[in-house]
Image 1 (cartoon, rainbow, N blue to C red):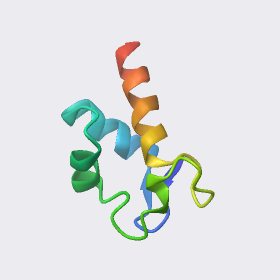
Image 2 (image 1 turned 135 degrees about the vertical axis):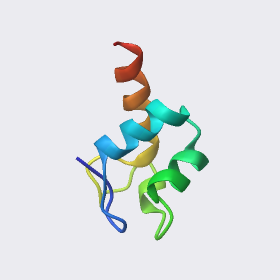
Image 3 (image 1 turned 90 degrees about the vertical axis):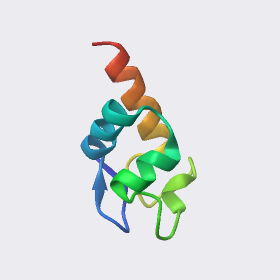
Length: 67
């Protein structure tokens, strides 16, 4: 599931970063490079990706908490 089109970042990379660093979007951006080029994926209504970064972080936090 693509989260960042420009930097080819997939959801699993976001989930791994959230597991390591928590939900701080700036740290997730630094770790994965998601949202650092055109920044469209930082907007929840971005239509260039499967799951925009803020929603990917939220989903990862929920999935990790459910474990």
